Amino acid sequence: MKTPEACQNMQDIRTEIDAIDQEVIQLLGKRFAYVKAAAAFKTSAAAVQAPERFKAMLQQRREWATAAGLNADAIEKMYSDLVKHFIEEEMKHWRATT
Image (cartoon, rainbow, N blue to C red; front, side, top):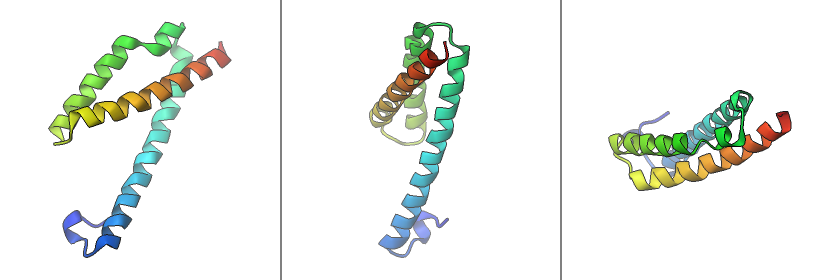
């Protein structure tokens, strides 16, 4: 991987961004595997939804975003959308296994 400063043209930039995005997607797949595995430990639909955990998780992601110099609102929105989707999928998985 080239550093941003080592890129010599837009193709270098795009290649590196594509590689990063591919890594991010692979990590999201890994995260989803943990979400599905968590369903086995949940005893109710409320436990799957875990609204207090969801709220605390978003706050922590905001803090991490700020520490990384990113826009906390944008990161919160991204994680909110992502985790809502994962909760829906976890709920399906939980219902199928209970």
